[in-house]
Image 1 (cartoon, one colour):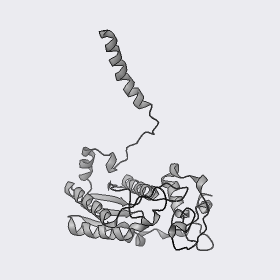
Image 2: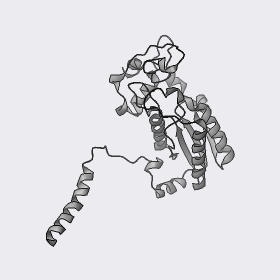
Image 3: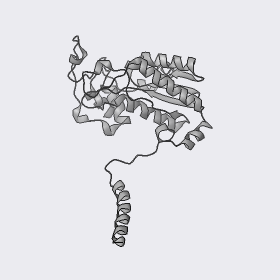
Image 4: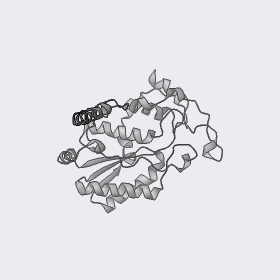
Length: 247
């Protein structure tokens, strides 16, 4: 009886690791300088080389039938990760949602009040400042957060020992305009704001596995009083124009 019990214990101890190996989730690969993936020694080591942090500020909102709810958040974080592979800078995503009240008629959207968003980012900056980080680059990936990021930057500069800059407010003069001007452009100006050509193209580069090209539709723009009736899926732009960039 004791021998049988011992065999059962051994079998159970072997079965648990095997079960873990059979998971259907894809493996997670560690990304350099990405705070959620780092150990405490990793952070301490980075602090000997840099005191700079990129903080993406984004949203969790619908993006039509072809892009994920987390498009703004994921694209912002992936951009920051790419930067962190080239230079020593910490990437610290703090929140998924942003301010998106105008998308609340569409399933999956999560919105937070601007005052709460400000508090979370400012308090996060205070925590990072305490650990030794001093320079904060605020990377806004959602147009609805523009006013909020202005206040976040101002408060970090006034309430912490750090220095913050809103990248959306300063990158314009440093844009490499020559390559951009060489890209093919439509003959007539187009309205491309939300889930359209630009955002879908960015997503195909940054998060291609999450883009559903079968769900792409060319939406027709109208201007009714309520945004939930503006377009069938609230896509401000034409994602089918991707042929211009992908051909």
